[in-house]
Amino acid sequence: MSPLAELQQAFCDALISPKAPSESLLKELVDDGLALQRFNVYRNNFIVLNGDALADMYPVIKRLIGEEAFRVLASAYVRQHPPQERALLLYGDQFPGFLESIPELSELPYLADVARIEYAWTESYHTQDQDNLSEKQVSEIATDKLGECQLLPHPSLHCISSAFPIYAIWQTNQSDDSTESISLDQGESHVIVLRPAIDVEVREVSRGAYHFLKQLQSGNSIDQAYETANELDDTFDPGRFLTKHLFDGTFYQITPSS
Amino acid sequence: MKKSTSLLVASAITTALAMAPMTGVHADTEKEKCYGVAKAGKNDCKAGPGTSCAGSSTVDAQGNAWMLVLKGSCEKIVGGSLADKG
Amino acid sequence: MNEAITSLRSAPARVPSRAGAGLKAVHYQTIIDEQPDIGWFEIHPENYMGKGGAPLRYLERIRSDYPISMHSVGTSLGSHLPLDRTHLNELKQLVDRFQPGLVSEHLSWSHGYEWYTNDLIPLLYTKESLNLVVEHIEQVQETLQRKILIENPSSYLQFKQSDIPEQEFLAEAVKRSGAGLLLDVNNVYVSCKNHNWDIEEYLSPITREMVGEIHLAGHAIQSLGDQELLIDDHGSPVCTAVWELYRHCIDRLGEVPTLIERDSNIPSFAELQKEVQFAEHYLRANQEVDRVTTR
Image (cartoon, rainbow over all chains, first blue to last red; front, side, top):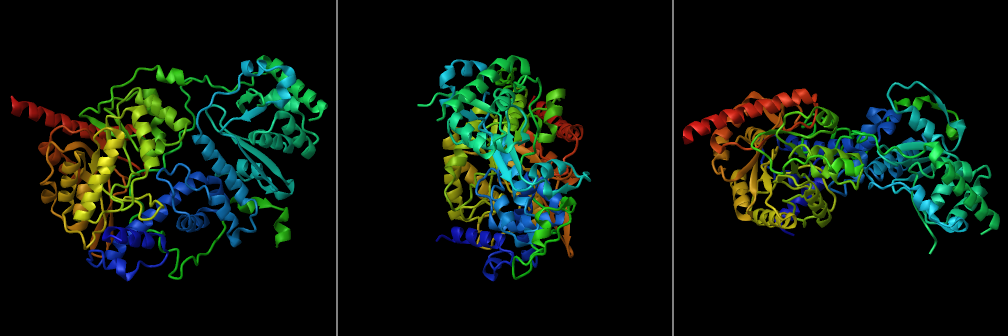
């Protein structure tokens, strides 16, 4: 390995390690008695600036566990999952799973699913722009062929379901000053996140609507999607759902089956 | 596919189509001067906190030996499986 | 919607010899509503590498009113690893779409392994590094089909193995690759103080022909025992010493487009604009002198 490659890797090893930098790296630095503090500027940059990016993506998680605990977790996350891309727009994609792996957080079993809403929000925010489904597109298809069609949800759509009332938790923690308390006895929650036009929307939906959208998202026909949704939630009413959402930006395309 | 399903789905869609002009459900794409929430960019070229910060020091020499003190709005979330988990 | 945005008037691409400001998301709406008299704005292209959504819409709108400059933080010119093709192609797409008047990157590195530090780490200043940096600058310029500017870094440490002074390394890299120099005056000040370098000596190989842009920013001062370390946090107004150094630089270098950078403790746009006007005042005073002396 070239001296440059060796030095850069030793430097990165020391940046990512929580331990003091190795003697062999310190020997490479010009020393005026402050070499260690000088190195620490870079380690602090690495941990804190990437932690800031994470805090920016997960404001609700930060409110839920408090600034101090968030910082501790963020530092550990940055060390375990350093940025893989140069643009930090989506840095933090592994954070929900990381939260699940922390034993001390097992008493907050809803945390990872709330984090999934927050990640979906940012991903949706940066998704490509896409025109919504038009009435013209739908009216061009023969009525008896409609059920066989694929009805494609907007590319920014994310579906998240949880055994816990994550929508209420997310919604209540949108600002610092909420005093509302939430009971986990409210049970499961189904959430969709999408950006139909300008702003990202987070909506709580019924179990049936959730499965209907998930089925459509995976490319199944409208008929198949309805049957699955109906099996899992016999209160699902496709007429009501589609009247409200067919043209509101939840969908962008309808295509006859091939 | 059951015939009843196809009929139900087709009728749901044709209803939605017929209702569309009246429901005003179209996504609002024509707002002038509205570009959406302006989130701050995450890449820049500033330095962080310099020498004075916790970036290195919350962790002891053994590594990862941190303490997690949960002090946030999670205190207001009650009931459910929390009791079971004890 | 997109049609309405792109049909607006489009500002020229060229960045004028005026002062500009770093474009911050909190200022988007003020800039669109008030159309302030600012020469140009600078962005970090990495913040616009999403596939769609609000950031690109705002940029599209602001670009139609102002020239912009793209100041990349992600190419990692000094890394021993190859440049990231995906990132370069994304940069190329943004350059093609938004037609910036200037494109720049730092003399630094940010990955030693496949992961990325998101920080600008100083180089080992040796012949090996110089060859590598020149090669990487050439690759970027080839991809973008244009000249780029390379910025002198602010740094907190030096490597013993370095055997070329930073300013000579920089001047040589720029000459050999055909790139230009982005002279960050605050970085000159910060690095010279941090390493006890002589400022005049640092500036000596830097010529008028090299410099295509100047940066100004504030820094923090931290005491370590009886010594001080300057931290380039872009978190306060430009300090008096850096303004003086700036004046000295433009006396030597002439009218160079000058950017006020602010990345933390971001003030209101009006306050930021005052600093921009201050820089512009120096630039104009310099233009007056230039006119008198060339007559």
